[in-house]
Image (cartoon, rainbow, N blue to C red; front, side, top):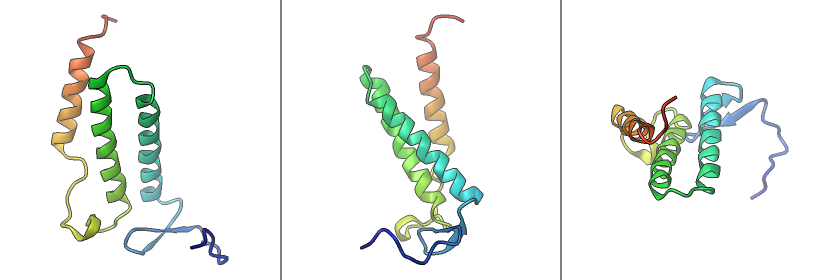
Length: 109
């Protein structure tokens, strides 16, 4: 399979379901931002010294992969499954609790 089409893309990109959207669409911008955040977390994890923090960041990365996949799927039915939220209130609460626990370890400002 070649990595070029010789037809140009007319400023569009394909989504998981085969539909086309403009490359400057909010959807494409959002999953680009999610990918960049995920890459940054990967870089942080490569310099880790704290197994607990590494486990937390690994979970956040998994959540971000799910979010990115959902953003790339207009029907939010990854792999033909029923639609579901990639990031729920439970995910947010788990992250907030982890932040609160870590904050207690920091010196006062």
